[in-house]
Image (cartoon, rainbow, N blue to C red; front, side, top):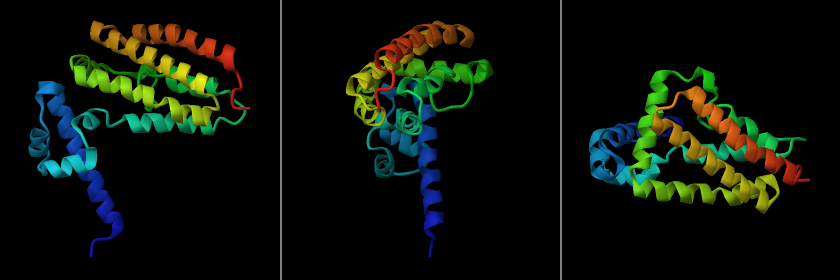
Amino acid sequence: MVSNGLRERKRAATRQRVSDCATRLFERDGFENVTLAQVAEAADVSVKTVTNYFGAKEDLFFDAEPAILEALVDALRERAAASPTSALRPLVLDGPVLTAPRPWAEVDAVSWDGMRIWSRCEHDSPTLRTRRAAILQSWSDPLAAAGGSVPWAALMVGALILRHDLLQKGLLEGAAPAEVERRVKDGVGQALDALERGFGQVGD
């Protein structure tokens, strides 16, 4: 009999393999040109297995987004005496990837180029651009529940949209990490400053 722990590890390994194969195909051929059948073949699984794990092709591309939302919500719930805006400020400003602990100065050329390829893939796909907007808008309710204010959450989502747009634009222009960091900290930093002034301790 296979233990539950071993079964879960096998499921996690299969899911990761499917995700990795999809990533390589999207980067090589573009999102719109890749089918679920091709992903399944590359991962040596059935199409049904792919859809059991991910539901739709867009979910393969945005596989990391649930973890990003979870990190934002966790930071709000664990903020103690900090305001909601200040609790999220380090996640939003201190590095290019919201859930990665790597600061801007430690981003190497290989990972930056990988981010550029991924951003180009998203930018070139109307399907992915639409899904990105829907994902970010869907974060408003959980952020409001954790942060204590619906208007604050709506404006925070706006700041996150601005962050995404500045990062993507910088990547596609071929800007260096330091330049994109400057743009993000300037533009999004101003938005967060305004949120802090306008709402402060909204959860109290």
